Image (cartoon, rainbow, N blue to C red; front, side):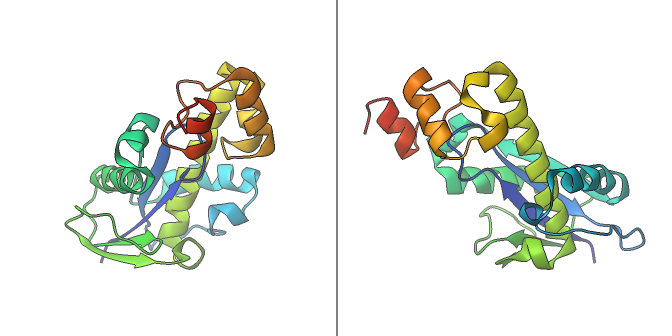
Length: 189
Protein backbone atom coordinates (compact mmCIF):
# COMPACT_ATOMS: atom_id res chain seq x y z
CA UNK A 1 0.00 0.00 0.00
CA UNK A 2 1.32 3.42 -0.99
CA UNK A 3 0.91 5.88 1.88
CA UNK A 4 1.39 9.60 1.43
CA UNK A 5 2.25 11.77 4.39
CA UNK A 6 1.00 15.36 4.29
CA UNK A 7 1.97 18.34 6.42
CA UNK A 8 2.15 22.12 6.19
CA UNK A 9 4.35 24.98 7.32
CA UNK A 10 3.44 28.59 7.81
CA UNK A 11 -0.01 28.78 9.35
CA UNK A 12 1.05 31.14 12.12
CA UNK A 13 3.13 33.79 10.31
CA UNK A 14 1.75 37.18 9.36
CA UNK A 15 3.30 37.13 5.90
CA UNK A 16 3.67 34.91 2.84
CA UNK A 17 2.18 31.64 1.66
CA UNK A 18 1.22 28.55 3.60
CA UNK A 19 3.22 25.63 2.17
CA UNK A 20 2.16 21.98 2.15
CA UNK A 21 4.01 18.87 1.04
CA UNK A 22 3.02 15.29 0.29
CA UNK A 23 5.53 12.44 0.32
CA UNK A 24 5.35 8.72 -0.52
CA UNK A 25 8.45 7.07 0.90
CA UNK A 26 10.19 4.08 -0.65
CA UNK A 27 10.18 1.21 1.88
CA UNK A 28 13.24 -0.24 0.11
CA UNK A 29 15.21 3.01 0.45
CA UNK A 30 14.81 4.21 4.06
CA UNK A 31 15.84 7.68 5.22
CA UNK A 32 17.57 7.96 8.61
CA UNK A 33 16.78 10.80 11.01
CA UNK A 34 13.27 11.77 9.92
CA UNK A 35 11.39 13.67 12.63
CA UNK A 36 9.09 16.63 13.15
CA UNK A 37 10.85 19.43 11.22
CA UNK A 38 10.63 21.73 14.26
CA UNK A 39 12.74 19.26 16.27
CA UNK A 40 15.57 19.27 13.73
CA UNK A 41 18.30 21.84 13.20
CA UNK A 42 18.19 23.93 10.04
CA UNK A 43 21.33 22.15 8.78
CA UNK A 44 19.75 18.71 9.35
CA UNK A 45 16.49 19.78 7.64
CA UNK A 46 18.41 21.02 4.60
CA UNK A 47 20.32 17.71 4.35
CA UNK A 48 17.11 15.66 4.69
CA UNK A 49 15.31 17.91 2.18
CA UNK A 50 17.70 16.74 -0.55
CA UNK A 51 17.68 13.12 0.61
CA UNK A 52 13.86 12.96 0.67
CA UNK A 53 13.68 14.29 -2.88
CA UNK A 54 16.28 11.76 -4.02
CA UNK A 55 14.89 8.66 -2.25
CA UNK A 56 11.11 9.10 -2.04
CA UNK A 57 8.90 7.27 -4.55
CA UNK A 58 7.03 10.56 -5.04
CA UNK A 59 6.94 14.02 -3.47
CA UNK A 60 5.14 17.26 -4.15
CA UNK A 61 5.26 20.75 -2.66
CA UNK A 62 2.39 23.20 -3.08
CA UNK A 63 1.16 26.39 -1.50
CA UNK A 64 -1.72 28.75 -1.01
CA UNK A 65 -0.78 32.40 -1.40
CA UNK A 66 -1.28 35.22 1.08
CA UNK A 67 -4.18 36.40 -1.14
CA UNK A 68 -5.82 32.96 -0.94
CA UNK A 69 -5.31 32.94 2.84
CA UNK A 70 -7.07 36.33 3.09
CA UNK A 71 -9.86 35.18 0.79
CA UNK A 72 -10.51 31.72 2.28
CA UNK A 73 -9.11 31.89 5.88
CA UNK A 74 -5.95 30.10 7.00
CA UNK A 75 -7.55 26.70 7.65
CA UNK A 76 -9.21 26.48 4.23
CA UNK A 77 -6.07 27.83 2.52
CA UNK A 78 -4.02 25.15 4.31
CA UNK A 79 -6.44 22.47 3.07
CA UNK A 80 -6.16 23.93 -0.45
CA UNK A 81 -2.35 23.71 -0.31
CA UNK A 82 -2.60 20.12 0.99
CA UNK A 83 -5.00 19.10 -1.80
CA UNK A 84 -2.64 20.68 -4.34
CA UNK A 85 0.32 18.78 -2.85
CA UNK A 86 -1.50 15.43 -3.03
CA UNK A 87 -2.70 16.20 -6.58
CA UNK A 88 0.91 16.98 -7.54
CA UNK A 89 2.21 13.53 -6.64
CA UNK A 90 3.44 11.53 -9.63
CA UNK A 91 2.04 8.36 -8.01
CA UNK A 92 -1.52 8.10 -6.70
CA UNK A 93 -1.42 7.05 -3.01
CA UNK A 94 -3.78 4.44 -1.55
CA UNK A 95 -4.02 6.35 1.70
CA UNK A 96 -3.14 9.82 2.97
CA UNK A 97 -1.93 10.50 6.52
CA UNK A 98 -2.36 14.16 7.48
CA UNK A 99 -0.65 15.80 10.42
CA UNK A 100 -3.24 17.37 12.72
CA UNK A 101 -6.81 16.76 13.79
CA UNK A 102 -8.64 17.50 10.52
CA UNK A 103 -8.70 16.09 7.02
CA UNK A 104 -8.72 18.45 4.03
CA UNK A 105 -12.21 18.36 2.53
CA UNK A 106 -12.26 17.45 -1.12
CA UNK A 107 -9.66 14.69 -1.00
CA UNK A 108 -11.18 11.59 -2.60
CA UNK A 109 -8.48 9.27 -1.24
CA UNK A 110 -8.81 7.41 2.07
CA UNK A 111 -7.46 9.86 4.69
CA UNK A 112 -6.56 9.78 8.35
CA UNK A 113 -5.70 12.77 10.55
CA UNK A 114 -2.98 12.07 13.12
CA UNK A 115 -2.25 14.58 15.87
CA UNK A 116 1.52 14.81 16.29
CA UNK A 117 1.96 12.64 13.20
CA UNK A 118 5.02 14.60 12.11
CA UNK A 119 6.89 13.02 15.04
CA UNK A 120 5.46 9.49 14.75
CA UNK A 121 5.02 8.70 11.04
CA UNK A 122 8.01 8.90 8.70
CA UNK A 123 5.87 9.93 5.70
CA UNK A 124 4.45 12.91 7.59
CA UNK A 125 7.90 13.80 8.98
CA UNK A 126 9.26 13.88 5.43
CA UNK A 127 6.39 16.11 4.29
CA UNK A 128 6.94 18.36 7.30
CA UNK A 129 10.61 18.81 6.34
CA UNK A 130 9.85 19.59 2.68
CA UNK A 131 7.19 22.12 3.67
CA UNK A 132 9.29 23.86 6.35
CA UNK A 133 12.47 24.13 4.28
CA UNK A 134 10.49 25.51 1.32
CA UNK A 135 8.66 28.04 3.49
CA UNK A 136 11.91 29.11 5.24
CA UNK A 137 13.60 29.58 1.86
CA UNK A 138 10.70 31.80 0.77
CA UNK A 139 11.27 33.92 3.87
CA UNK A 140 15.00 34.19 3.10
CA UNK A 141 14.13 35.51 -0.37
CA UNK A 142 11.63 37.97 1.12
CA UNK A 143 14.34 39.05 3.58
CA UNK A 144 16.62 39.95 0.64
CA UNK A 145 13.84 42.10 -0.81
CA UNK A 146 12.84 43.68 2.53
CA UNK A 147 15.89 43.41 4.85
CA UNK A 148 14.43 45.93 7.32
CA UNK A 149 11.80 43.34 8.37
CA UNK A 150 14.37 40.65 9.40
CA UNK A 151 12.29 37.83 7.85
CA UNK A 152 15.40 35.60 7.85
CA UNK A 153 15.33 35.69 11.67
CA UNK A 154 11.65 35.38 12.59
CA UNK A 155 10.36 33.78 9.34
CA UNK A 156 7.28 36.03 9.39
CA UNK A 157 6.01 34.88 12.78
CA UNK A 158 4.40 37.47 15.08
CA UNK A 159 7.48 38.40 17.13
CA UNK A 160 8.31 41.72 18.78
CA UNK A 161 10.90 42.40 16.04
CA UNK A 162 8.25 41.80 13.35
CA UNK A 163 5.70 44.04 15.10
CA UNK A 164 8.36 46.75 15.49
CA UNK A 165 9.22 46.53 11.77
CA UNK A 166 5.54 46.80 10.79
CA UNK A 167 5.16 49.82 13.09
CA UNK A 168 8.21 51.51 11.56
CA UNK A 169 7.98 50.49 7.88
CA UNK A 170 4.33 49.56 7.42
CA UNK A 171 2.70 46.55 5.81
CA UNK A 172 4.11 45.03 2.61
CA UNK A 173 2.10 43.41 -0.18
CA UNK A 174 2.86 39.88 1.11
CA UNK A 175 1.39 40.50 4.58
CA UNK A 176 -1.82 38.59 5.34
CA UNK A 177 -4.45 41.30 5.64
CA UNK A 178 -6.95 39.01 7.37
CA UNK A 179 -4.63 38.60 10.37
CA UNK A 180 -5.47 40.81 13.35
CA UNK A 181 -2.02 42.48 13.83
CA UNK A 182 -1.89 43.37 10.11
CA UNK A 183 -5.47 44.67 10.14
CA UNK A 184 -4.57 46.77 13.17
CA UNK A 185 -1.46 48.18 11.43
CA UNK A 186 -3.62 49.10 8.43
CA UNK A 187 -6.14 50.81 10.72
CA UNK A 188 -8.86 48.29 9.78
CA UNK A 189 -9.26 46.79 13.26
